[in-house]
Image (cartoon, rainbow, N blue to C red; front, side, top):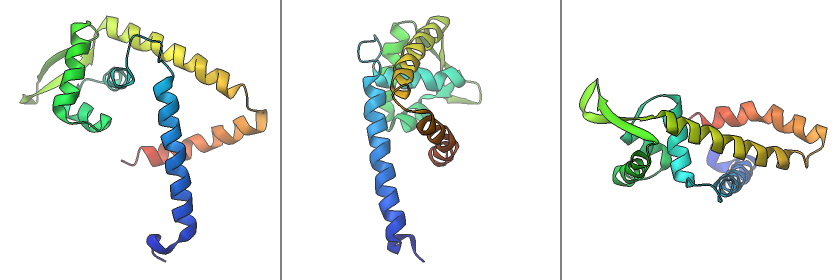
Length: 145
């Protein structure tokens, strides 16, 4: 059976895409009163794991390299990240968090966790268990890219 003809999979795909879109909207509104934009928070989150190339930041954000570079320059001017040459490729630049950047990322993450916890508090125990059980599956799907 072809994926294009399996109506159940197509309906599930549509529902999943809608839910992901709503999750993005929720994530973008999480820190609207914070000092960092959603794109800046995403960039800090990526760089928190390990130094990464500007091209990877752009790809993960779904923007072109010049747009990612613009965000990175703003973060650098704020003292939150630093750019350095990639030791494996002299043409590339790596972005990594400064101590100030890590502190800002940690504080914003804590605020967001509090807001999500308040949402989760609206769920009953069975709903929370269902969500917890679904997270590994969602992670598998979102990590496949």
